Length: 228
Image (cartoon, rainbow, N blue to C red; front, side, top):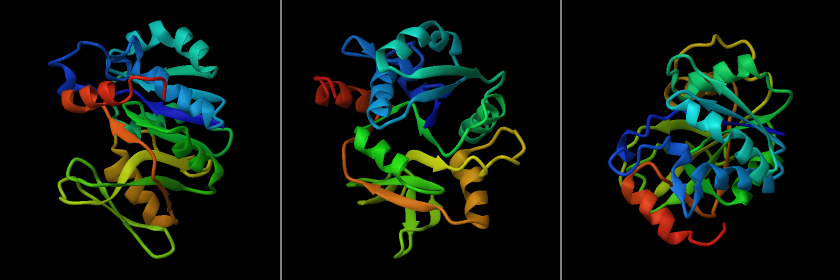
């Protein structure tokens, strides 16, 4: 199974602590992305397409080492201009069409392998949801009793709740006829998909942390000193 890994973020909030491409921020002597890719391999993913734009040359320089470390076949697709999370996927699908059902994930978020495995073992279109104590930084999910996604809510809602973990599974037909354009996964592609077909929500209860801020990066470095 293939995964498309979104590595195109500008990492604006991390620039006070690093000038490295966000997915490649070093954690205990290795790029953060190396840890993400190993989790994918443990979940049964055999190949990954890295979707990059900002400082893509840094990703290209480390591609061979990342592939060897994780034991994955890696391909790099570079966007000529920033296309957003949705556009990055559409662009990569044009360059490297999916041979079957596939995963999509953010390169700056750490999950246990079980989170990806749940998505690999699922069927149809789905996204991964995780319960958190404070959902204000994340997009919340509205789900019906059957576990189907009803709506994605904007960031800023306070208190505990189910949030979007940023991991998706789609069939090869899902975006086959989509026009390649700059767009957001959460604000455009997913709502458009939800309007025409069902999207399941798979709940995951393991470790979840993104490294999008200096504080969360520091927390990750302190909490996960040992090999995940």
